[in-house]
Image (tube, rainbow, N blue to C red; front, top):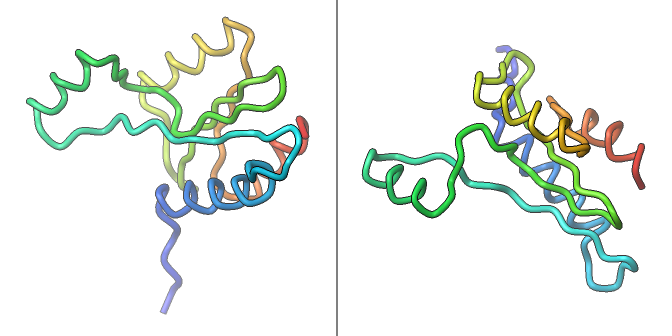
Length: 117
């Protein structure tokens, strides 16, 4: 039986747990921060309500705050593709001078984050 591929949510969870346990604890100095941006909805009414509160389609899955730096991380599976809204958000982020990275595994994230820490 072939092993199933990881879902985006599982990859994102691995990234969050690793970073949170290595750089976000109270005893770290400086203490960094990672958080997700829930931007999915289940109903049209929920979507209208969340949009009125500032929810935007295409925003990256994770945002990582480091000293004097903000990183945007989009998580995809091995075969996952960015939507047009995600590509648009990536361009906005880069045009504003921030770093954006598409990652497909914890190892991809580690390669990226090691450029900054």
